[in-house]
Amino acid sequence: MSLASNISLYSHTSLLDALNLPASVAKDFFDGKPFGDWKKVREAEAKTQSAIVGRLNSVIRAIGILAKTTAGRR
Image: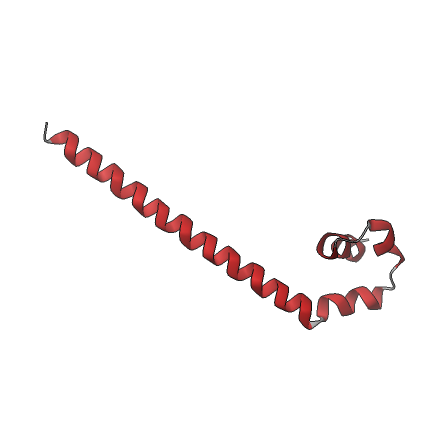
């Protein structure tokens, strides 16, 4: 069931069709190069998003420090 659920999620196949696949075909799908390439792309996208969020956090932190500094001078 777990393998069929994963096939359904990752290959946009209905669960019923995934359940009808032989386990060896499902295993070959996950062990294949196209799925490995897809995983690498998704990991790269996640790293990029994480870097963007980190930079935004730094900007927000710096704005907060600047606001505190400016407020203290008045």
